[in-house]
Amino acid sequence: MQANPLAVFAGIGALLALASLIGFVLKWRCRGADNPVIDNLNARINAWWVMVAVLGGAFWLGHGAVILLFCAVSFFALREFITLTPTRGSDYPALVAAFYFVLPAQYLLIAYDWYGLFSIFVPVYVFLLLPILASLGGDTTAFLERTAKVQWGTMIAVFCISHVPALLNLDIPEYAGRNLLLIAWLVLVVQLSDVLQYVCGKLFGKRRIAPRLSPSKTVEGFAGGIALATLTGAALYWITPFNLWQAALIALIVTLLGFFGGLVMSAIKRDRGVKDWGHMIEGHGGMLDRLDSVCFAAPVFFHLLRWGWA
Amino acid sequence: MNDPQIPPPGEDLPAAAVPRSRPSRAQRLLAWPITGFARLLTGARSLWRGCAPEPKQRIYFANHCSHADFVLLWSSLPPALRARTRPVAGADYWQQGRLRPFLIHRVFHGVLVDRELHDRHSNPLQPLLDALAGGDSLIIFPEGTRNPGEGLLPFKSGLYRLARACPQVELVPVWIANLNRVMPKGRVLPLPLLCTVTFGTPLTLGPDERKEAFLARARETLLNLATEAD
Image (spheres, rainbow over the protein chains, first blue to last red):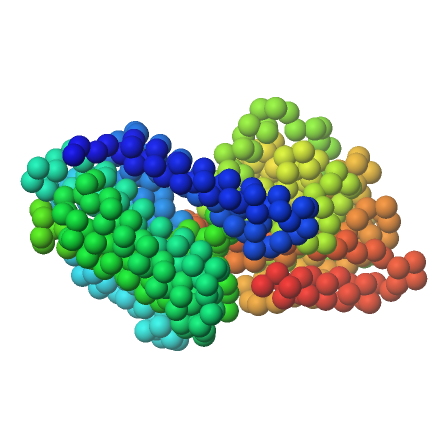
């Protein structure tokens, strides 16, 4: 069956319309009384409309717009990451390189489809370049820690996120011209898993899964969210190059990675003593709060596809 | 660049600022890319904790760690307030060359103070008092110079003297967080990092409050705002 992104977005739109309706009914049942959980739910749903509209707009404009969009996403994510992990004055050259050289270069490599350099640019060359730049300042205080912060920021916010638009460059036999659907499927499954973990956790959550890292994550939310998102991913196998079982297995892998991504990024936030990475997205927090799961899922999804299907 | 260092009272100095008219539409168009750039780079998150962005006459007093401080504070104000709020800046820096006088007068509509005590017979605060008398709000940095470290330097007396001379003007403490990392001292290219501008509860000068007590209290208020905003 041939599928086009428009059908997928129509489905997402219907889902969001249902969510907005539920949010409206919940709010109406409060009869004007303040309920922070319901207000936050509605803020999240409204932000989802905006995020889906932005992504849909980029899809409509084409591959270049999608690459530019994720370049901007990386910029916002890196800005949040570096803001929250304090560096010292002599890290300035490394930070200038991260923002003004590494970030655009990584996305140019995608635009020019230079896979050989795209895949090792950050993990090899930038990995070595950043400590060299940091050492030039002559400041040894917490040197390893400071270097690791900038390296981690570029790995998570630039390298990992850049694997989402890199999906456009995969040559999959009998799937030509439909690579945008890979992005739609990945983002939909991983984000739906986050949403369903939140919903199942709010409805049935009892036992906390990692109370010190992320107090809102529960065993019930985890199991329900992963299971339902995996089923959805499998049911959408017809928009992917996978068969039903492959789609289910890969959906399970990316949702699990997404869950652990959220856990790791939460650990960093708790260590810094904050709840959210930023305030960009109303109801959700920052860009990294929304994308922590995608950061961990995207590179593995990309390489699984490249290894098995391209 | 914008060090509104105010010499101790008693030493009267000439007014260095030229009397200015309201900013024109062309000037506001010029200001737009600058404030837009500042907002894009820093995320420009402004928290109005102790007061609302209302069209009242105010003196915004803030911590000073970077050349970009007043640009970010000024960009954080709604456009209507921005048009009537003037940064106070050092004449020695801003009157050099061609670009700086153009920017401070035409774009930022600033008030210049003479920090180098050229004439010992006039009041260095006169341009500020004139601006306040004209109904404008001001942005000042009472530390007097950029502070590379944490916390706040002792305040100069200008804030007290302005408060004494214009008791009807609200004194709003403003804490600018993280901007020192955006533009470290001696660097030219700014880094994109998130900054927060927090507006606190306006202060009022007590009828019998002494200069030292008031300045210490104002400094304390600003430091408390920094801890709250964190």
